[in-house]
Image (cartoon, rainbow, N blue to C red; front, side, top):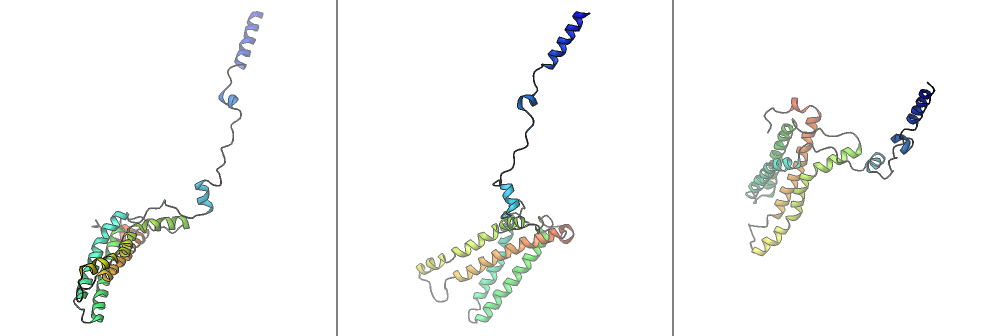
Amino acid sequence: MPERGVVGRLALADEGDAAPTSDKLLGEPSEPPAVSSLHPRRLADRLPLVGLTPRAPIDPRTALRDSLPLAGVLLLWTVLSWLAIYDPFVAETVRTAGAVAALGYVVVRGVRRGRDAAALIDRDAASVVGQNLRIALAPAAWFLAAGLVPIVVDLWNLLGIYGLFGSPAEALVRVCALTGLGTALLAVIAGVVAALGGTELSSPDAD
């Protein structure tokens, strides 16, 4: 019996001296590392400069594809206005009619795109600015084209064609600039429709 008591005490001592657990080896669990004030997430919380998380109401590639008919409408009415070169007022009226027709396309297409579009963001500054950066991608292509069109003037002058066939650079700048404006408006309309309940407001046959 005394031997068993000694053996029992030795067994308990062995259990007490068992290999230390990971907590004993590593010490007490340390507090999670504090997030540095320079961490991007902390900076976004303190200074909401730009947040690129919210997506644009319409994918930029889709917006560019939808802008092609818009550019076609504006270009068509611009060419028609050249037929009224004898009267600047009539020519300007024809171009205004083209802008109205283009606006109609933008509204209808924007409403239809609103069924599957992302809602326009109206929360914090970072989200709003971030979403607008994405909205600006497609219109920026047209605004860039408008800035490059004046190169046509130099090429046209090199051809030596004057008189009735003046350089179309000014008209093309107007078409590109209005197309960029219409593309941005189309995306905004789609975002507004989505925010207000796009499935109910848009046509079911949107493609």
